[in-house]
Length: 231
Image (cartoon, rainbow, N blue to C red; front, side, top):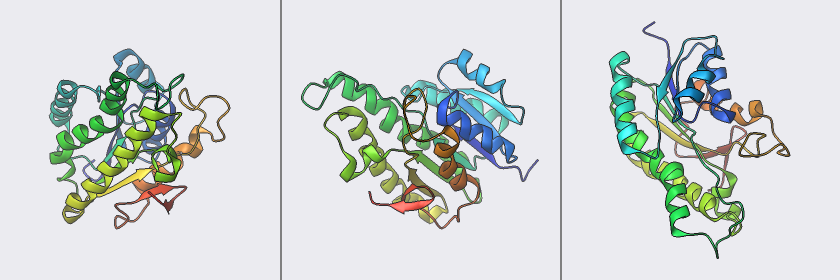
């Protein structure tokens, strides 16, 4: 269907990413469920009784990102929604005084640099959409008043991700592409743990809203529960 919206969700084999893919598919989107592990990705795809496809994509690898963009382009001429959800949280047992350079680099490669590279590679397809949206899944830990020395690489990577969102908005809003960061809150996922205060449905809500219902004029913002919050 020519008017069917197309969405790509990174890190979509589980947690918030999978729930976002599930909800968008239920709304009639064609969903590209992207993940770095092919077995996990295809297993997740099998749970979606909708128009969805698996896309092999490791956001920490430039080669994988390029290959994913080429594979995407074989079947699609545009991309309406890019949801940069893939992320890691490796800070257990370290703080700002003990975190290593290697851990910082690893976290940034996925949580910040990967988002930028995925956006760059898929930009030609986003530009062919009449009203494209880029949604970067950040965290309250990436807000200035949310930084914690006990969660060093994650906090700083999400702070950088918010900066990437600001810069992308500066250059893409003139092309009609909305770019926002989202704080989904503390969600019961593998990352958030069983004691988190929110369900995956609640964590996915604002992301799905931005992808499907929010005004296209809403751009360059940090959003939680469908409302702007401070950077």
